[in-house]
Structures are given as C-alpha cells and as structure tokens.
Amino acid sequence: MVNYNQRKFRPATVSDNGEVSQEVIFEYFQEGQIVTSSYAGGSIAKGQLIGLVDKEGNIDMRYHQILHSSVIQTGICFSKPEVLEDGRIRLHETWQWTSGNFSKGTSIIEEI
Image (cartoon, rainbow, N blue to C red):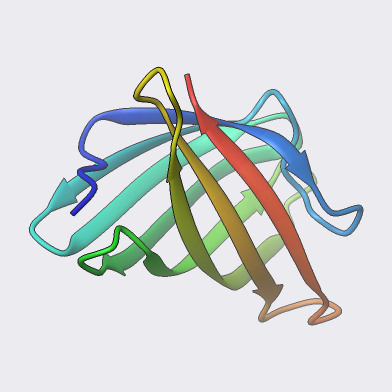
C-alpha cells in the first residue's frame, strides 16, 4: 500500500472547470486506511478532504472548500497513484462537483 502520510502535493494539470491552480498545496495525512488533507492557495481560502485508501493506493475521497469569494464547493474524487522513478507520487484524479454545476473533470497532482 502507498503511504500518503506527511506528503505534500501540487497540481500539475487540471480541467478547465477545476478550481485548483499551481498555488494550491495539499498536505496529506494517513492513519491506516483513512487519508485526510488540508489545502489552500490561489482562489481557495481553505479546503479539506477525507477518504479511504485501498491496497493499491487508490483513494476514494470527498472534499469541501471555501473560496476567497465566500463560495462553498463540494465534490467527490477518485485518485490513482503512479510512483515516479525518483520515488515521488503522482496522483491521476477523476472528480465531480457535488455542488454548483455538478460537472466532471480530471487532474494530476504531484508530490513536491
């Protein structure tokens, strides 16, 4: 199983309908199968996620965030890990808003 505890990630790519940018930093923590993260940066004032990780390192998560414009957003995300040659983790994400326009998208975030 991939261990996400105390790893930090930054977006590498994101769909046009996504809210994250290069300024967003995700700090992950893991206790057993439970993964959590707090994040902020760019247009996001504060965000949090919580999820479950399986034996292959895939994460099934839910997230919520507040924008600097005082908008609350929520969503679901499935992340699939890729371990890079240098040992860092790249997460391939498929997500959907559960608020707003309910659109779907993809992102890639990489460990920094």
